[in-house]
Image 1 (cartoon, protein in one colour):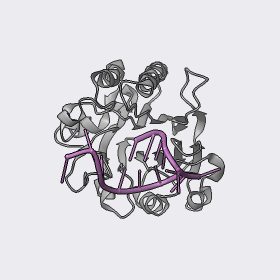
Image 2 (cartoon, rainbow, N blue to C red):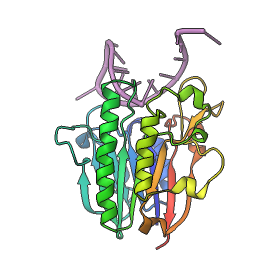
Image 3 (cartoon, rainbow, N blue to C red):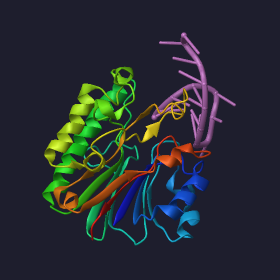
Image 4 (cartoon, rainbow, N blue to C red):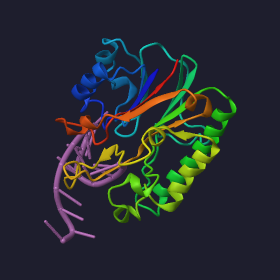
Length: 256
DNA sequence: ATGGTCGGCTTCCGA
């Protein structure tokens, strides 16, 4: 089973690139973030016509997550539990062939300190609680998406340049590490322990041309999923295409 | 060198 994740930075702006990539990605389930589309204006037919089943969770203008799958998903759940007043569309779960898959777009949090950073940390605490429930289920589970967390110094081109950024602050990294200590496996680092594994290059300052990237799109695998981990990778070439997203797809394969 | 560039129900905001 192949599961991919891709922050597309606007489904309508990315339509040709996304359709092209979906045709070659060979994924059974695709987790998408930053749809920037409401559900009732989502270009469903473009994807359904190519055989994808869609579960979207959008909002106007910003955020938005979706699960695309070759077979219909079971038990789809929208929204991260823990705050009924939170109206931002950043989380969706579904089950594919017994594997629970959570797709998230974790808050950016900049500028820090400030209310946006407080929201990020509160969201990560809610995620910790949901992740603990998922572990307790002992079902094979994958949490993936744009975490907006640079876990380690080697995950950015110039750590000093990111010291005061909400993606790299000690509290942010500690909250991510707390997730890992629960028992989750960082699948991309598991398969690629050395070297750059960048997944994002800013549109500004020629970041792609200079390879000034960061690793913020992750796959966390429960023990039951990690036992089945075969491979993981990053479709880096997507960043060099015309009208590319600022993120590239990441993926894992699990044995059946 | 406080710039630069995307996307969105755009004329600012979020990233």
